[in-house]
Image 1 (spheres, one colour):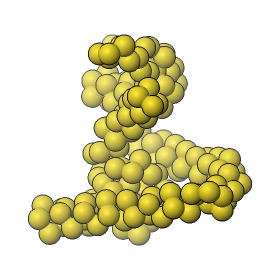
Image 2 (tube, rainbow, N blue to C red):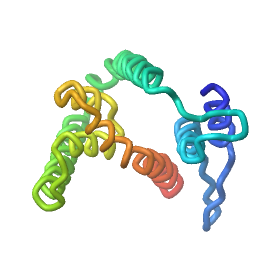
Image 3 (tube, rainbow, N blue to C red):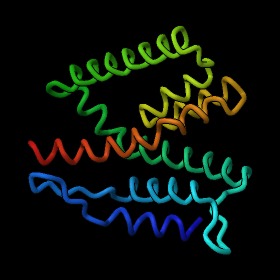
Image 4 (cartoon, helix red, strand yellow):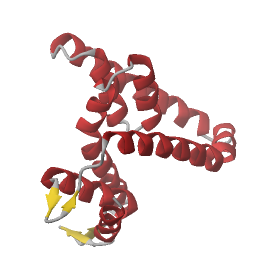
Length: 174
């Protein structure tokens, strides 16, 4: 596990040139994600087994979720309320709510009524699209099975990598 994370951190530092002189990096989030997807797909390299036992996986997910949420809440609390009450903070917050709700409704309606996916899977899919582990944790508690985790892992890697790339492109084009 540690070796995979270290490889991912190294890959995340590699500059990737794009047309137009744009250079992006996967960073400390995208690099380990990309490497873990690759290592998980090949499963084994010589004597090294890249599979993580289910119990260890579940434990790391829960610990990671708690640390992530505590860190985000602690760091963002003051800035969130300050931004909300200053300038266009409330407008941006309301647009964010609107976009989030519309995305959820569209995915849930199309997935449930048209594609006939189970609702637990769709709840995980929505949390993966939003790259939001808190929604995944809530979904898993509500449904009590692995359907939300399956939906989450189906779209999370692509959503995360696209967010990393688009954020860098937006900053470059600004």
